[in-house]
Length: 408
Image (tube, rainbow, N blue to C red):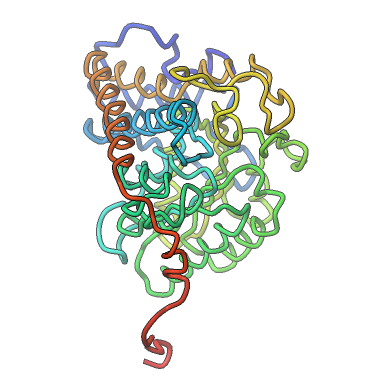
């Protein structure tokens, strides 16, 4: 990872270009990126790789600003929750933090349909690191903050917590604390979409560790056989909990596994929201056209340790040093700081400034508003009632009669 991979082609504090307003300049920018041969390749050069369209160049300014807004909203949700875990002894919430990976969630979800009825919105299934995906898909931050602290007014009544967030109103179907089942369920949704001809798309986000599970291969195999509208977004942040992904995967690029199923396998720079969006938009269009699934591997990095906030300090971004949960210092501090030099917030911000879509003052205001939104969300959640122990068995069994729909 060198300066050559920085999408602006210049240090992050470079002055904005005065020529960034024209779509033609955006087009030229992305052609330059594509031709640069960056260290993190734009796509997998295998025989099964698909060509990626340069869609982001033509997005309207308000859409591009919303992408930046969502990135900083995720960032400040994570940072605010980290600080709360470190300083508030009464706080019961916990998280597998998503900071550092924001461009993946926002790039993918920006290519989806996130509004409309349940038979119109695209579905997203998440992993045990779900808060970034949820915010990018449109989940209410206040209700999510309440759910993470097991409050009765949370998204799921305080019964699910962080690893089981769900909000079907925007198509965020759910997170999963297990490694693997989410993508099997997501292919089931994709099958339903195809069966009823709804043109919806089912997306699953999963970590690099899922490659070593049978579910990974079963999901891709069936999706390929049936040409399902399914997109597998594998967020390769290098580590399965505390072990490097190379311990369970013999390939440099996990996307090479797509060759087995004769589907596109795309490697994308997961720190660059525009590259992620381009790959996702191409995959979504392909899925809606009935051409089947795509595997997208986003090379990215998490700034905090696997779980919780060990090694972090209040008010500072990232976790460094000893992690008592890992009983080791499993990531070199230099590695963490090197990845932080290619921060998704900085990349998005500087590209939009160079295009003339944002200026620095407006970007600062957007980030300040995102920070305040996160503070207000957790403050609101603090005032909500806890779920009651005596209600613990609610929603376990269906009550009343259920129509036998298969015979209707």
